[in-house]
Image 1 (spheres, rainbow, N blue to C red):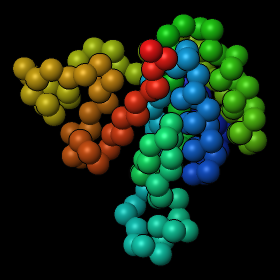
Image 2: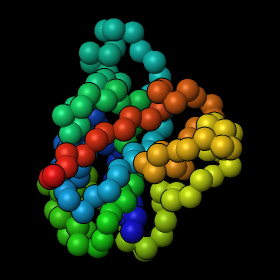
Image 3: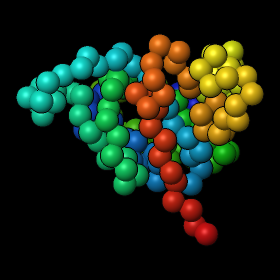
Image 4: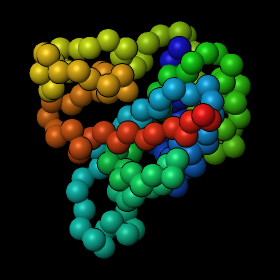
Length: 151
């Protein structure tokens, strides 16, 4: 099941970092994708004070390259929706909507773009399906965070 978190305003980097850390700590969350306008490349001074900076999510450093306009969350089941709503209430003070219409926001099957990007015969890990961008290099637009396993 997928849900969409739609903040009424674009989130800042600090808020994005807090929301992503709390979302990734939930057992019901399979993967999370953020969407928004791309941030332009910046020099070192702008990097310190600007929105394009490195955030730490689930113990891993990730360079934030977009402003967070939407957050798509893939869940194992519906049990985590109330926890996600509580996280959003805590961190997003400008208001938000959570769309739980049971729509599919994150692709689950290989797309034509995946074939163009990785090749028709290539094996693609499940977490990468449907998030290819043909205009950029792979390491420039995707950061994969490994969940801690309880094993």
